[in-house]
Amino acid sequence: MSGMRTVFIVGLLCVFAGIPGAAYTAESVLAPARSHARPDERNVASAAESTLAPDIGLPAPHTNGKISVEQALKERRSVRNPLPTPLTIEEVGQLCWAAQGVTDVHGHRTAPSAQAKYPLELYVLAGSVTGLAPGLYHYLPSSHALHLVSGGDLRATFVDRGVGQGWVATAPVIFVLSGVPEKMASMGERGRPFMWVEVGLAAQGFLLQATSMGLGSIFVGGIRPAPAAMVLGLPPKEEVLAVLPVGHKP
Ligand SMILES: Cc1cc2nc3c(=O)[nH]c(=O)nc-3n(C[C@H](O)[C@H](O)[C@H](O)COP(=O)(O)O)c2cc1C
Image 1 (cartoon, helix red, strand yellow):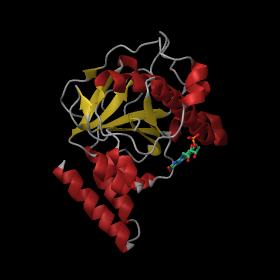
Image 2 (cartoon, helix red, strand yellow):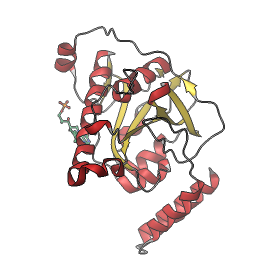
Image 3 (cartoon, protein in one colour):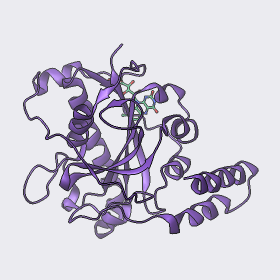
Image 4 (cartoon, helix red, strand yellow):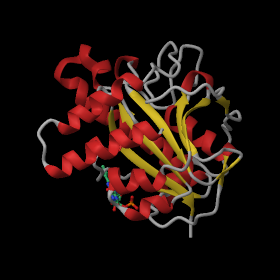
């Protein structure tokens, strides 16, 4: 990680210094260190780094919530100041499933996808989670598991550089939805807008799930996509689309 941080800091300094192409250079230097974490039939994992740690199986998701869909729709509200109280790994798993979980033997997910291309990726920046060490994790839909990308609490760095809305860092867990537009290439010019539609669909499922669990969350779209992707170590083909901080409501 220290090498990656050095590259990142150099890249950021170059960006601030206005050196043309510097950000691209930093991305390029990062690229060779990346390896695909764990490809599966639908979801080519694209996390920055592969760790040797075994994937962390998540508890099976529940399909019987405490409130109706209608009640969740009524109660959902953006929450910007969640309590720092830890979430549990069960809650993290349930939220991952709500956004991108696999729901049948064909690999279809909780959120629809144009031509079932599934261009979205989901990351978890865990800060305070009972049963899960602080770190950056990549959600693996087909195995309902988390792949550790890098250990340590990245929330403050990610929010400082990639979001710029400081309150986001107070959430015990921050979820990030990214997308790979090239997966939509067969749809021509409609591919990229479709990817954005899909992030909205996935996020709405996530927000309703959080509401149903008594948690508070919010869709944060006002981000700095390039630095955000760099902090997460995403490959150049993958873009950060939305940030979803979650915590208990005050
Ligand atoms: C595409 C999109 C981007 C948003 N970006 C931000 C953001 O960057 N920061 C923020 O505080 N809220 C953001 N929001 C949340 C809206 O401010 C919020 O949904 C709106 O005020 C309505 O309130 P409600 O969600 O409680 O119904 C965003 C919402 C959407 C749909």
